[in-house]
Image 1 (cartoon, rainbow, N blue to C red):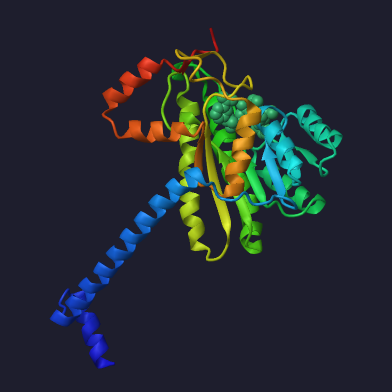
Image 2: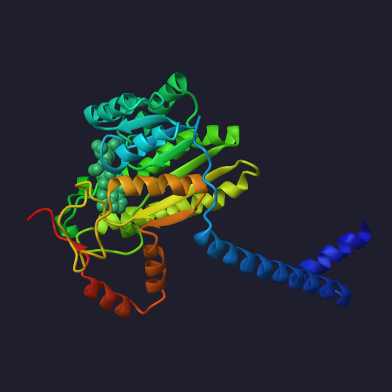
Length: 323
Ligand SMILES: NC(=O)c1ccc[n+]([C@@H]2O[C@H](COP(=O)([O-])OP(=O)(O)OC[C@H]3O[C@@H](n4cnc5c(N)ncnc54)[C@H](O)[C@@H]3O)[C@@H](O)[C@H]2O)c1
């Protein structure tokens, strides 16, 4: 006992015997070998997975919340999740469009879907609506944070209210929804949180300063949450962040593209299918199309001026929606 105490005191002072130092160095050497093994294993596993994708887990019986389900990607997500046998809970601020999505799902004979009018940027409304869903349908097991807005003009033309609204819907809503639902996922040791960011969450664009900042925030939120969920052993709650390129829903107004054939807008149907597939395969992060991931990560390692030169050459940007 006295010896252990003495050793601890010496350790605190940084005084270790030769044997203790040798044991410590051997421990670090073992950890380095394990790290190298893991690095090589996961590196080759990811290449293998590009050719042989992981099996898509069934979503039958899952309760999937889709925000912004009344239009665009959200409408497609709701319909396609329902076509896979999931019970879909549709939230939108636009009650009419949301009801139309649920009616479409019913017409197709998929499992019953539910519609709730909800402004996702209002924390109290989010908590109240989650409580209603729990009563009507049960615990939500998959969240797709999709609702978003994209005002497109110069920073100096944005009003304070508009910037706050962009962050309220595109970022803070994710926090409120996750805080309202994550406890039941942790309790049930089952859940998946999908956050829709954007390629504008990987690189900055003119006329989109608040939007890009909000979508970068969604990438940061998703990465940090993924790490934090490791603090709940065995909780089995997964995260996926999706960064789509421009999608033909009407949200992305006045796009300008130099090479229209290689940089075509994605369809909301294709993006929704990619989101669902990534969620079912347990992917942590994807871009749509997937080659954007390699382009954006490679460009990040270049000098800023070289990256700028490529951006100018590609000529992909958005013009202001004010003129
Ligand atoms: N369209 C694109 O080019 C594109 C590209 C990359 C990422 N995204 C992202 O994909 C997501 C969906 O985009 P989309 O193109 O389908 O948009 P969309 O405008 O077609 O649909 C968005 C839906 O969100 C709803 N909504 C807006 N504010 C809301 C609020 N406060 N509460 C609840 N619902 C609200 C709208 O009513 C609408 O039904 C957004 O997060 C967007 O940023 C879109």
